[in-house]
Length: 186
Image 1 (tube, one colour):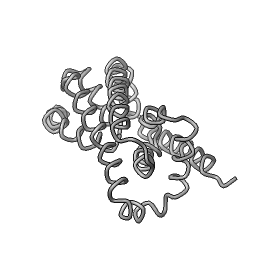
Image 2 (tube, one colour):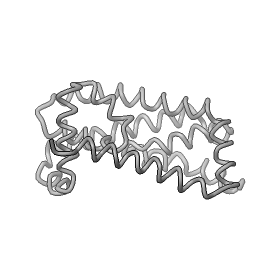
Image 3 (cartoon, rainbow, N blue to C red):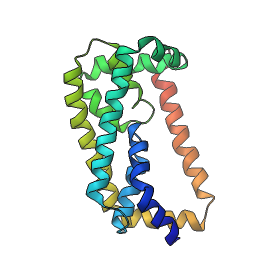
Image 4 (cartoon, helix red, strand yellow):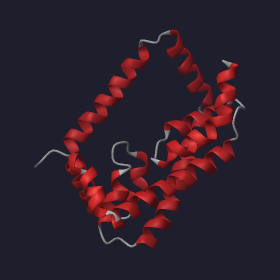
C-alpha cells in the first residue's frame, strides 16, 4: 500500500494535470485526500488543477472557434447536448462558464458551444480563469477538509466492495435521467 502512495505522490501531479485538462474533479479530490494524508502538497495540487482546467477550456473554445468543421464532425452524436448547452447559455448568460465547471456531462460541451458563437474570447478567458480558480478551491479544499470522512468511506467500500457498483449505478443513473430530461425534444 505504501508503494501505491509513493507512486501517486511521484506521478500524481502529472495525472492531476492531464485529468484536469478535461475538467475532471475526481483527480483533484484524490489529491486533496492525499494532501490530507501528507502524501501530496495541497497548494501545488490546487495550482496544477486550476492551471490545467483553465487551459483545457481555453483549448476547447479555440478549437471550436477555429476548427469548426472538425469539431462538428466529432460532435454529431452530441447535437442534443450541444443544443442544451446553447439554451443554457441563453438562460444563464456568462454565469454558465462558472456553473459548467460543476456539472458533469456538460463541462466539455459548454466551452465548445461558446466557441461556436461570437462570444468574445477575452471575456471568456477572464471568466474561465476565475471559474477555474473557484472550481479548484472548492474541490481541493473541500476534499482536504473532508479527508477523514472520505478515507473512512474508502475503508468501508474496501471491506464491502459490493457497495461501489451500487453507488456508481445510482450516480450514473441519476446523471442519465437528468441528461435525458434536459435534452428531451419539446
